[in-house]
Length: 438
Image (cartoon, rainbow, N blue to C red; front, side, top):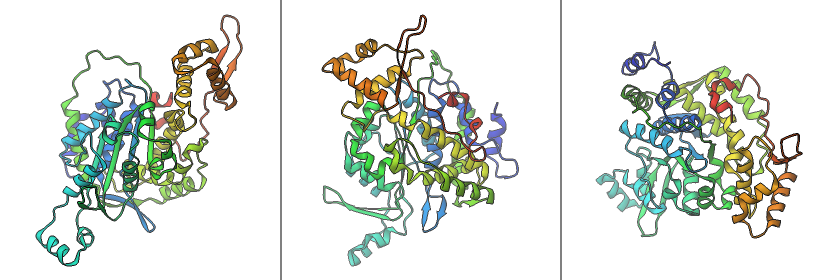
């Protein structure tokens, strides 16, 4: 059990000798009495730290700089408490005094205007612009512009099928320059070093509405981490109010992260060796829909290393930070195809996803007639259902099981087996029991 009184005392001190438990320990305590899966809470905590860091803390990677902002999408069926997890993190960030939280609903143009409005243009800037017409040169000396998109209903924020907005957000993930554009109303916007963090919530159906299948070929998709979660089964009729002491400890911790974790990250020799090994030996994902993700996997890992070292109030990435970051990322990657469901696979992807969800929830075979009964309102004729079931079996997603004794025959999901991981780069004990059971 985390000693909250001790932590609160240490967080407001300026000493460095006796550091408190890291942010994730306190956060786990804070969200214990909730119905959301801890997987959602973990990634909300990761998102909050990344947003608070902005560009204050970074990893110099050759000619390029990696910042800890992340694009995270919690995916699961309606009612599995994605929104609850997101709102808890969003409220904590807001309570710190962080002033750059995006509105719940916007448009591409309004989003750019809001970013542009963060920049205070001095009179001398205006004069120089009039004389030389070069706003970008003036903006290059301005502080980075930030935005934390914490949208539990992500489609409300971005709309459905808004390719232009999706493309813009994709480019902002690692944008390291002054962004200039002229929007529809003729107004020019000039945004210095936009630093965007995204924490969104969605269902598979909503995700398909927000993102046309073409997004699989766009840069945005490779920058997005899909976090799969399931209902916990916990039913808390009268949850206790959050502990004020725990809340204050988290707020103070986030404030210290933003204030003290500053500058380029240092990397220990042991951490460098592990990162080198992971970069050169990662085998990729079996699902071809994530081919573009493979090109940015190492950048995602570096971002997580920054966040996990910041969670200790440190600017040094250690071997333990690398192992922790790789464990969390590997576990997430294992579930990302499940989070995506049948998106982008076929014109019947929504029906196929429904079949997979029906089978996934069952520990016994389900007869074909029961599957067809469950999806009969979604199909034109029974032959479509039969072909879809056969297709899933041929693809190795489901298996046919014969009847044995009192158990009737039918179909079951073919469970994916997690690849063996090297013990020096992956430690499953760092995950909660709830996470390990996925």
